[in-house]
Length: 320
Ligand SMILES: NC(=O)c1ccc[n+]([C@@H]2O[C@H](COP(=O)([O-])OP(=O)(O)OC[C@H]3O[C@@H](n4cnc5c(N)ncnc54)[C@H](O)[C@@H]3O)[C@@H](O)[C@H]2O)c1
Image (cartoon, rainbow, N blue to C red; front, top):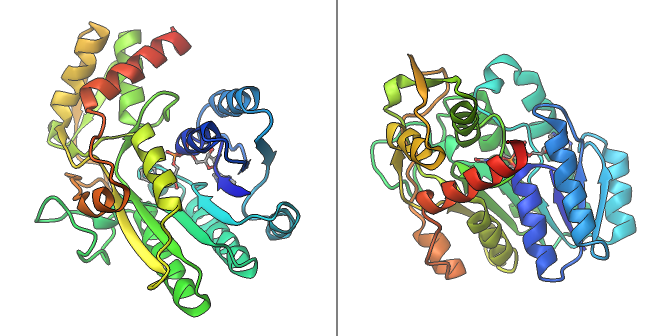
């Protein structure tokens, strides 16, 4: 059985579905917290339960509960772990760092330690492009220095990489650390730009454009991410026991062009308030995905134009 943590979350839902479509049994856990609309989390679980009755099990569980987690690994013979549960979001980490410490550090330790105890065959987890901070050379390779995170969120993700590296070497658990770049798509997160901008367009509300729109992002479509996780789950780093991979489309779009794209798709003009750069934000994300392409043979990534069309179609069906 494969354990996916954070299954009620955006990427967890899509990843679970990718495996379930291939008839692979999935055990999902999530604490169903209210960081954003809990109905969206409930709907994701409902959809998985309805479509994949036989192969999908889910329980509400906090990764800070070591004892219950331990029992779950024992009872359901977990063999691989895809750890996606986390407190996400750069901005929220400025106001509530303690939640990040609890879930992203202490909770992460629980999952890692229990994975070691039950000799998990492959431990994959979601790190983030935010560990790169601001760089001078693009596209960013996995090998660049990442010891200067600009947000507390990024600092917790970097800590995950360091903690799991030590476990992989000491206890020989194969660990894959996946640095995800701005993931978007249907059933996406309400706190992220694709959702916020589309909502504002549909409701004729204003949006805040940070840093005068100078930002640039490497948007990666969620099904490409799920496919990459699926393929990589069968490629544990058996010799070195540790690997880091950028999960990105390696194509960037400027924030103002991204807004124009949504205006085109919704047929609305969005009112913009220009505000200064937010603390913790990086100016540009643009990853090198050669390693990912080589290992997974995924050579085509969904374009942001196509992916945002799928997103806007879903958004209008779901909310309008
Ligand atoms: N979406 C992106 O662009 C992006 C980019 C880089 C990295 N990531 C990382 O990918 C992972 C998934 O992100 P997402 O976008 O799906 O976010 P999400 O918030 O939709 O999903 C995370 C899920 O984890 C659950 N969770 C939080 N704390 C928990 C706890 N203590 N115990 C059990 N469950 C808990 C939440 O309820 C949520 O459903 C996270 O680790 C995130 O940091 C996401």
